[in-house]
Image (cartoon, rainbow over all chains, first blue to last red; front, side):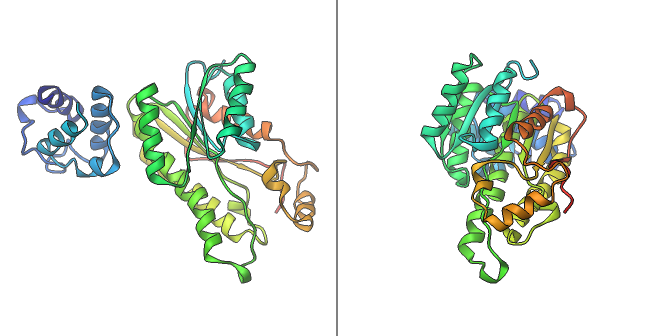
Length: 75
Length: 247
């Protein structure tokens, strides 16, 4: 799951996979703004075939947090 | 067919404009999700659609003004279809009240369905549409939202809110290939308008230049246009379907 999620992050934010680490946080780089955040959510939901709760969309503030959230959905 | 293989969600699909819209969209090839509270009536519309030989449809009975129920229903739809191409927010209630006799319950009821319910569906529909970076959301507003009428301050305010939401959402969602528009019917012959008091009914008819009430099918035609690629460069608009109402 982690590698699949890393690839989604890299492709959605258009950054190299090496930059996708647990500490990578929302709004700390120009590529991860509010617009790309929604693209990222859509890509995660589509790839893992899940639909996140609104609270989880808001809480997904880092790659580390995203791993926790996606795992919660059994993906 | 203008909507072949497209999945379209219609709230308030059990009667009036919603039912006519569902039948129209199905005849143009859409696979429909029929939503609303009245399960039996929704199934009756689904049966009409099947009998006409159009695409299959799914019925979801829930309270459109309950955010948790809306989210849960969208999860079920996402699991079944994986995408959404069109959203028609038609569910609405019309109740009249003079300002002097206005009660909080009335405000709460009208805004819960007409505004909150519409926004909940816009939110969830747009998230599903983002997956494929395409989609069209059509909110059923009302001419009352822009022109106003005595006794309809609350209803008018709720529809003006819908028009405002359309303007902002259209700008927010355009980068994702999602269009957002509204249709503002004038006086349309439905169960809802049939409940109006006689004097208000007469006043409405007197303000229509075409000298007749509109038909639900005539609203459905405009919804179809906004869902289809015929309007692919149209977003953020509220289109009146009102026979030339002058006030």
